[in-house]
Length: 275
Image 1 (tube, rainbow, N blue to C red):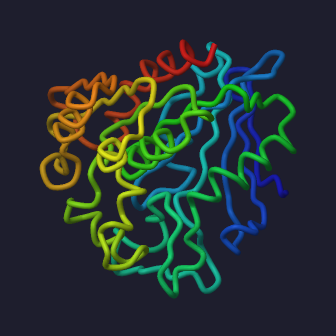
Image 2 (cartoon, rainbow, N blue to C red):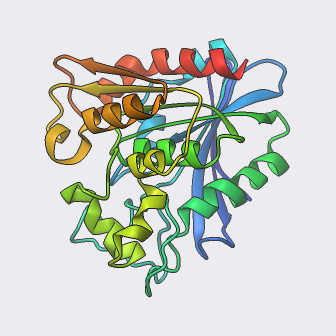
């Protein structure tokens, strides 16, 4: 594994690392913030949204001060494979590089898009091997937009691994949203039955459960009605008894101004559950 950069922040260390991934068949970059003090520390995974990489939340998420105070290790993976013969789709921000949707693609040409396996198998193993202070018995996950979709689906499918989950403006029903159903069709084929494994509402309908979710959503989000639709997730949770705290935030949009405003709340949410 290659260390690209390290910097001291609030007494901890913000690092950026790169490794050759056997899962994606590409080089993968990720960021880790290790808080000050003696570990081991609970691990909180942050999944970013469309067009982003590990760097967006690292530069604009404003998580380090509270993570240092609470003793949380924050891991920020990339959103997709990149480089080489990866299908980039430079003309479409909803597909290709920056738009991995945290799934394992099955259609020809997208063999590198194995982000679900990368996040559930390879990267946690790498973290355990190279970061002695990472306590993998205490893991939480959160994310924004496409990353919120990833956080919800990974938590629902792996409740034995994750002890906490939250999301900022998540895509809750990608199978039926115009801006995400195209990606599921491209990566998984034309049969919507194959999409259900990567759709939070479908997973709840199919019997998956998680301890509790926290979701923050800006009421001034320009994607609210055509891509996000948190009320659908609320209905699915209420009809099945799934614990959900949904907070609609007046005046807030989809940006990192919104995310950074409520970042401390989410870190406290996770810290209470991770111990």
